[in-house]
Amino acid sequence: MLKFFVFFLFCTSCLIQVETLTKFRVGGTLTCDYNKKFEYLVTLFEDDILYDEPMGIGSTGHGRGSSSFNVQGQDTDDGWVILWVLLDNTFEVYLKIAHNCNKYDNLWQTYIYYMGDFPIKDGEVYNRSYNINVTDAGVKGRTKRELIESGEFPEFHNKDSDLAFPLK
Image (cartoon, one colour):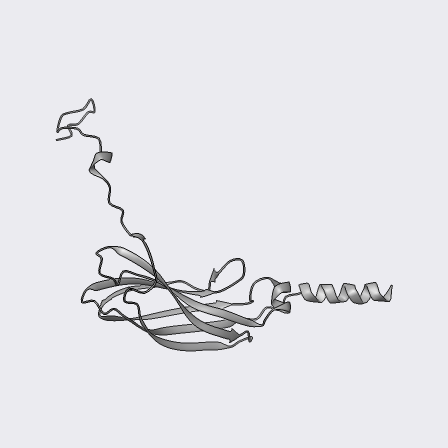
């Protein structure tokens, strides 16, 4: 009976989660080597085994040559409680940067900038600054606005329809 009680206490202590609040303030400069206006969205993420969770609201902006960014976020734990107890006591933090700094007109790329591992400490505030060159960096994605083939539109040949108004 004593072994069961000790085992029960151990299991319940693994399931009890102590809420800690760790904050991140990240800023810096994004650089684009092309002489064109570029746009971006920077989001702070915590890398987990099953689901990478955003830690705050993303920062959008645009620039020519370079532009500054600032994001803030916070988190209380590193994923599932049992895995957190068994594996580590750190946040694995990265910036997900969606941008169009490339030689194409409207192609967006997603670049992952790994910031490192940060110990989970209640009340800790991590302030970091990075200078990141995003020129052609990351995985190419779809264009932000898809082109629609003209064959997909119905042809009206500038004629009136049976609607109450003309389509001219």
